[in-house]
Length: 284
Image (spheres, rainbow, N blue to C red):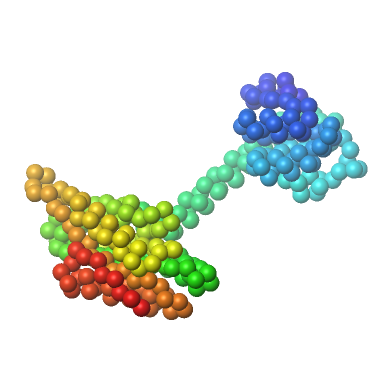
């Protein structure tokens, strides 16, 4: 069987026992495992179960003992196909190709579903999470905060005088600003934090396990990074620097999410009123 499979362009490896097969799989990437159901030591069904759990690799099971083992037994252990002996090599080759084709289709389906899921929660321009996902995550973090008595802080940010920039240099240049400053906001966060485009020129960030005074430090870092960004909307012209106003507030359980977000918005508005390019912290 080994030599027959290789005749059709496959690279084949062989192992005498389930243990040796598992040892080989630890160091060798394979596309499909073909096993007899009767092996020395651990049988083929146990091997199938182990392969599917640890390597997510398709398995074809062969047996000449149809009375002792059923198709259902093999499928329940994760087998992709079940072949009775004596095996015709042509039939095995057809089944092998079918299993590989189904594996490729499943991987492509998973890739597409993951891509669609990412698109559904991502803002296309800034590549940050979008507002819909923001509210879902904020609800989850607020629930965790309430259950475990953890801290939770929210930042709400707005680019200062962004309308003037758009009116002066055009929306394409404005989009470049949003894309770059979105990444500036994200790079100013810690690993456990998450950044979102809230809408228009507004961004927000969820800071789990964080008190308001700690969130203020993060906000000050973001504000300084934004101010240091340089934009050149007109070749040969003077570079442009923008600023950002930020509101900071800490969650006070069991308040509702709308009130929490509105308080962050009020804090940001105070930063605007006081001259922009500043951070305001507002307590519950």
